[in-house]
View 1 (cartoon, helix red, strand yellow):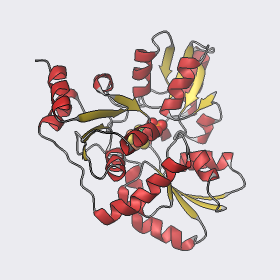
View 2 (cartoon, helix red, strand yellow; view 1 turned 90 degrees about the horizontal axis):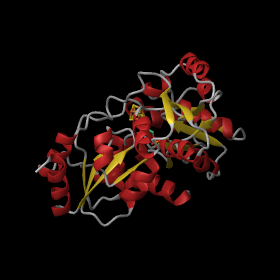
View 3 (cartoon, protein in one colour; view 1 turned 45 degrees about the vertical axis):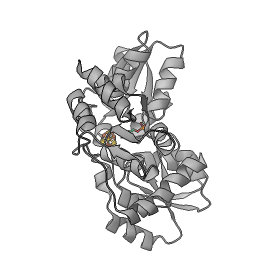
View 4 (cartoon, protein in one colour; view 1 turned 90 degrees about the vertical axis):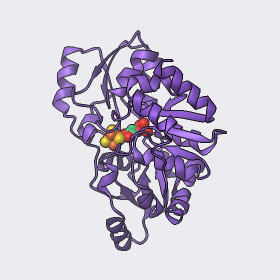
Length: 300
Ligand code: 13P
Ligand code: SF4
């Protein structure tokens, strides 16, 4: 039996589902039952009939799946797959910020730990951040941990006052405008599609700004043929599968998330076969974090 056949057999026997983020290696995307952005995957994990969720992504995603489906077994095939941005915010610092800004609502990007979610009022993803902040009555917002997404949301909602945590995604934050402009000079017809985790000076020259799912939709439905993609390379891999007629250029060669690439087919097989690594969370933290995630799912 091939590895693919073994994985599919185990999946059936265990009534398991494989979910994968768009930044996963292409072979994982191909075998997954659902591939999507953070919001799509959260919604799927909140309501499905499987006993086990194999989450091919990083820790905060698997944690969110567990929080939304506490009775299911949630498995992350690589325990060391984390998110440097999620690790940039801690609960002690957030509690301090809340004390200094008692009237502010805390909006946390889904790229955060369960403990940080437990301290936040509502969660958001890159696909709904503007709508989530608009849905809140408070005029003051504490936004954690992504300063770039926070600044983008603030630019769309000037009537609210934002306090931004100084976190960032290294993959997106290290993209330089010169790289994008060089590609644009080489391919003047190419449209620029950027993820809002990029810096403001990149977003300012982009034709389209959106989550990974939104970027995929923009490229596939556009009548244009060439695109500069300012997000992780997994989106380009996905486009080569679903839109082979389009030509894409990665905005900068190093836009690769090492953590997202830690899962491979062998680890996926082991995760099903040996049921590792099962996500376990403190019940109190989970219960408090659930409110934060559920309010997001209900709001948009
Ligand atoms: P989305 O897929 O929700 O756009 O998120 C991007 C990301 O950085 C996930 O880590
Ligand atoms: Fe975290 Fe950035 Fe990797 Fe997403 S791409 S998991 S935000 S480090």
